Length: 439
Image: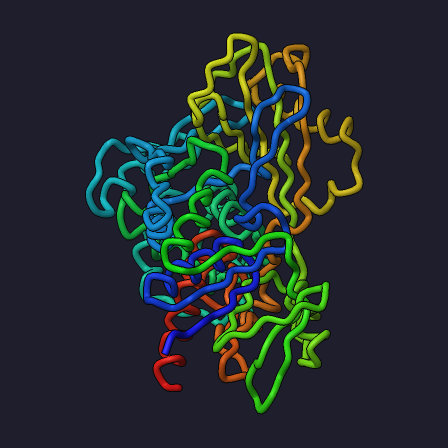
């Protein structure tokens, strides 16, 4: 008998779950509230320049196995470009230096790169290497912050400022003081397993293009994407989900259901359905600010650049990343993680802070070369996972036999990244398949 599964939410988690199930011969209906798919990974046209830009710059690392498998299934893996050699350019007010290696095998090249890194003294380098070697055997309670963990392991102030803090902000979108060391150590175990895992990958096309084939692929498996349709209620009978409803009152039936939603939307669906939604009090969002700017003048920087001693965290050279060749300007973006304090600032105030910092770091001489800028403040960029709630992330299984959850914020042991989202979708699909085998 043909089985059917309804998935609510066409972000990365929902898309991956849909593909896994469709390939297993199960009919899928993938519902999305908006006209676009991809969740937080989407693109739009800047009205002033006509350029297509992303809702914030995304980078990927070689360890993102599940996310890259998803792109292979979507036939868009060729849109991803990897660094030929591992390397990150760092800027402070004294100049720039690279953390890089041209070697490609094992852990040793990363240690060599570290020892050639100008911004750290010898004591700091030794402390980092010792901790990386030790970290694979460490298991931590969730209450220990990254700050306390690093201090307990003799990390110097230089090591924290120039090495650990940029990694924590990039991966957890949270301050060093609030980030759970239990989650961050899992990241380090994966990243520093090999040079390949640490290499940085970029999308050479707008993010929306990475998911553009999902409609065609699902149709080939007798499944479909249903856009502009918000599922807002479940019908519960005998500890199972019997059906779901959209806002217009239409009813949809399936053998199993996956909710691939951010926690606030999941809470609303649960509340409408008479299901306990107390979990929502445990979580909040952590915003990311992106400052796109078009400049007449070329900045001497790499594709990815860490900015130190400033509120700005990363500078991306989008002209290099996307191979953009426009004789009129160069395109860049600065990102600021955990940017809640800037939420109520004006465009002028934010632009001045960032341009002043770029001048302070010697990246630009003044702001006169900037011909246009756009600020994207993504208030719900990621869930805020901290030392108080990391153990409260919801499991994929629920109290209802045929209802499963997925998303970057559910309990995958990874931070809320695209890899966590892709992994959760895969795990949810596997649980659905096992459930359907038993009915």
